[in-house]
Length: 102
Image 1 (cartoon, rainbow, N blue to C red):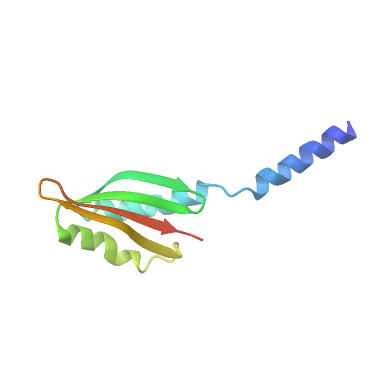
Image 2: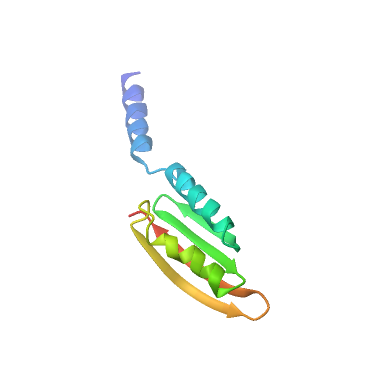
């Protein structure tokens, strides 16, 4: 019984030390609420414990600028990277942004 208890305690310690995506969900919620007021649409989001990768669709350069401008002031993210930017005359600007907390 003692060996089993030690094994379970060690597993509990591993789980407690593991980084959770829960904090990133709350950071992303705040970001996504801001995006919705710019005229841009989040088409895809990949959340991890290290940050978020977001793909956006913006019909105009102005709506894209409204998303990008406040990103420089967000203290929750250590690094913000515009990893791709494309344009399609039919849909507008497609961009991928990496928001990193580490």
